[in-house]
Image 1 (cartoon, rainbow, N blue to C red):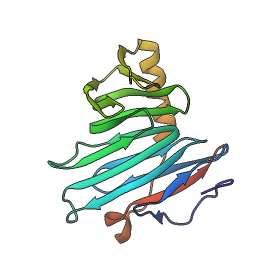
Image 2: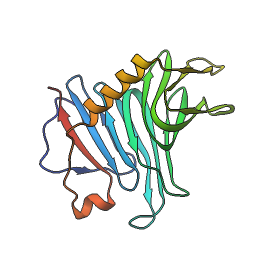
Image 3: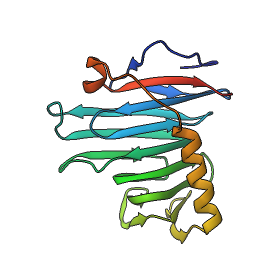
Image 4: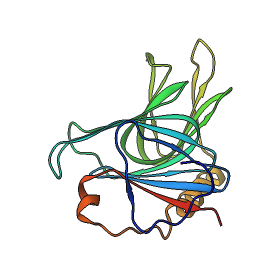
Amino acid sequence: YRGPSEALEAPLPLKEGSRIVTGHDSKAFVFFPNAGQVYVEKNSSLTVGKARQKGPKGRVHYELSLENGTVYSRFDRLGDGSIFHYATPFGSARVLGTDFLLNVQKNSGATVEVLKGFVGVDAQGKEELSQRVGKGERALIQAGSDGQLLITELSPDEESRLSRQFEHAFGGMTIKKTKSFEGDLQIVMRREG
């Protein structure tokens, strides 16, 4: 989607290969059945690679690519065998049942900040650089061929900021669960303001 966003009367379905591009004055919510929801910040580019579900409450397999920008992810505990994975140009993040922020800056790297739960993070697909990042921690994945991964603790002020950002992102967001919503990936656009 390009250009200013509009309030939609109903959610729009997404499928594998869909690309979400938000402008300077638009944001998007993406709802993933049996997994959670993602708030896509302004000036972001996100592509849905895989979007599969077995049965109405079965295992899910979602693979997304965040090329640039920021997403806030809010997930319940995923079912056994379920996968929710983000790829970035610098590394990846795998959901383990959590609330976390993922930010990609094209020339410098990616940042993961965890509000609750755990996220599996790696640098440039290198298993030896894979770490589990927990509540109150930040992972910095630096750009470059060696794929540096640094884990630090968030200060109390930074944790408080992250909590406020999540409340702002997800606060007041409601959606009617239609028959199609229960089984399909959905997107809702929202204008900044």
